[in-house]
Length: 89
Image 1 (cartoon, rainbow, N blue to C red):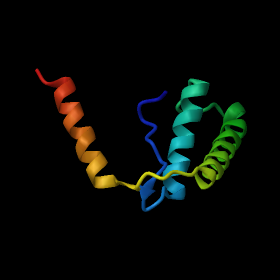
Image 2 (cartoon, one colour):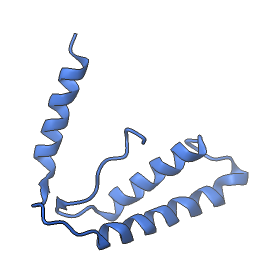
Image 3 (spheres, one colour):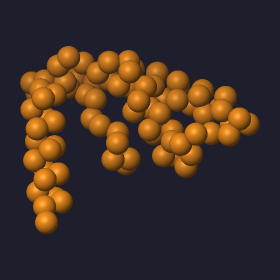
Image 4 (cartoon, rainbow, N blue to C red):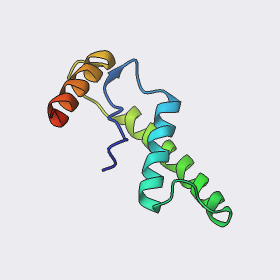
């Protein structure tokens, strides 16, 4: 999985359309192997991003959990701590 795609489910507030679109864009970039498609592929690329974003939003709406929502600031802090430990010299 692409490292730039972050978990979007079970956060308060819920993932925004921009976050979902950004994740879809990263996914399509990874799968296609192109950060910017050629003009010939731009329409298919953009359509794929829109479709992945639509399906992702539907998935997030349908998932259920009994776990309490995660705090974005707390999760970011944990991520920074893991990164520091991972890359400590």
